[in-house]
Amino acid sequence: MDGLALPETTRPGGVAGIDREPFELFLIHEGRLLDERRFEDWMALFTDDGLYWVPSTPDQTDPYQQASLFFDDRELMKTRIDRLRHPRIHIQTPPSRTNHMVSNVIIEEADAAAGVYLVSSSMMMSECRLDIQRHFSGRQFHRLEKDGDSFRIRLKRVQLINCDSPFEAMAVPI
Figure 1 (cartoon, rainbow, N blue to C red):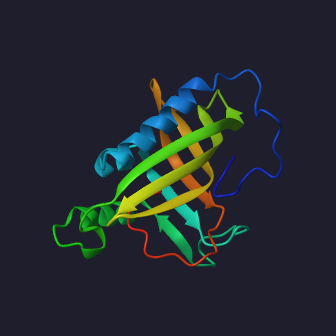
Figure 2 (cartoon, one colour):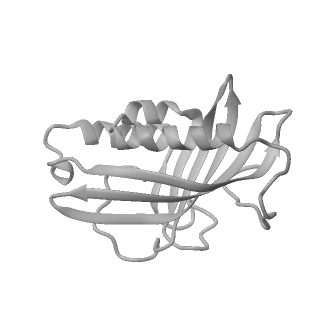
C-alpha cells in the first residue's frame, strides 16, 4: 500500500468487514470544505508529506516523468491557496462556486492495525463562475491514515474521465 500506485485489481465491494460510513463522512467533509472555500482547513486534512495529484492522462503512473494537471505537495498547496486568496487574482474574480459530490465509496485496501487505508470513490465537481458552468467527474483515490476519530490524507489522486482533454485553467482544487 505504498506510493502513488493504484491497486492492480479491485474486489467487488472492496475489503470486507470494514464500516464505510466513517470514510464516506470524511470524503463528504473534504468536499464541503472545498465548496465553502475553506482551503486552509482542506489543506490541514493532509499529512505533512501529503500529496494532491490530478494526472493528465488516463494511465499515468508517474507524476515525475510526465506533466500533470495538479501535483501539489503541502508547499505547493499553500502557494496555490495564497494565490486564491489574493485580492487581484484574475482567474478567480469573481470566485468560483463549487459543489462536490461523492458516491460509490469502496475501501480498496486496508491495514487496520497500522491505520492505513486506500479508499476509492466516484466524484463530480460542478463549478460556476461568470455564468459559465463546468463539470468534472471521475474516480478519486485517497490514501488515508487514521488520526484519532478521523483521518488524514497522505495522497489524493483524482482520475478525471476526460483528463487528457483541453481545459480552460483550473484554479480551485477538485
